[in-house]
Image 1 (tube, rainbow, N blue to C red):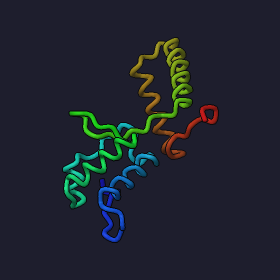
Image 2 (tube, helix red, strand yellow):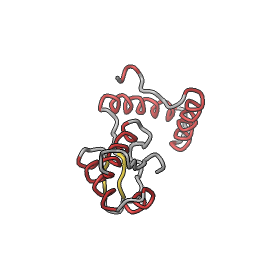
Image 3 (tube, rainbow, N blue to C red):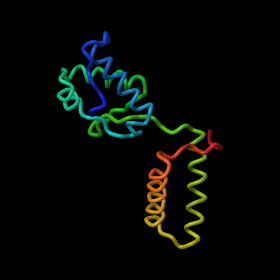
Length: 135
């Protein structure tokens, strides 16, 4: 996780610096929703700090709702989709499934087509945006 750095000139303690930087990365989408963060020991070793420093940052991020930690599942970014966007997404997905099912398309083929469409869109326009009706 090379985007997180400890700055000795920063007046904030290292755990606060880690917390602040990870929160920003999740908020801006540079760490995607449900993406697994490095282990406490792994990130601590990478940053040259004690594991307790990273553990405290993760604990505070979890208290803030920025990450979720599950036994065996590690710590993951947590930025769920806005409820209005989620409703719009589910309605659009249901309509899409109904349409492609009527054509005899399999779920696997439909998923592949959606993945291709997102890939093409990223190549042309960068990351997909939220449709205006969902905002």
